[in-house]
Image (cartoon, rainbow, N blue to C red; front, side, top):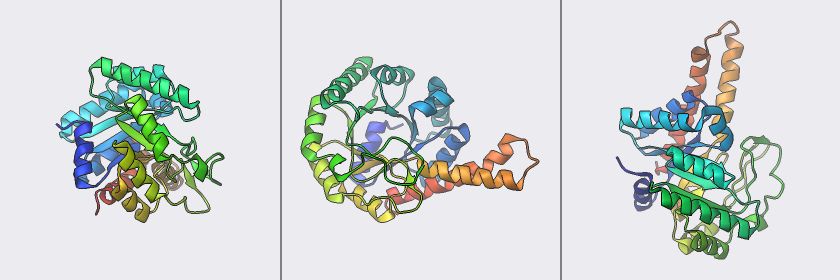
Length: 286
């Protein structure tokens, strides 16, 4: 089976992007895998620190590995937004395929130093795990929002010069810039438009695959343009949480006597599956 590194290289050749979808529960894992198999493309399952604490670090590794073996489908696991070197080491040891160190709230020197430590540990492990770093702030919570998060401005976006310096200094495999997305989705307005020219300039400058965080709420037009400009992985989380919660609320409202979780959770998983399949088809250019 191909590695995540090889899957990203293939996405670059095909000028498309791999979908990255966050989960909290096992029914969401199954929903994403069903969608990926229907589309026929590789998929990345993401778990933040909070999601890993809820599911279990080694438990999610075991689930993904068992599904990979059972289906023969390229399913990969990413440790999303990880805030300490210690927790980076934890997921490397556990067998994740990729991990992102999030040091955007630190000073530039601290961010670089910690990222270098993460990369060094990964290389010494002998495992083919991809290390991702990021610059620029897009907010810190995947939820429904009344307004754009404080601190997310055009000035907080990543510029190509800083991006190149960071990538050269740290040796990361993947790079996540701030280019207009936000974590979360606005409730009363469309999410901000992406700076496509900035994406293209950064992609041309850093020479590394780019990752787009905060994909929920982004227009199809912007997704297509961003992928054409060099985005190779797209993160979607809040959109899945929203449809899961909405479908679960409706099911519980209509079935007040039902107490079997597998019965009232199934429609929520199916709603997630539908969104994932739609997004994956968009990311592959359909």
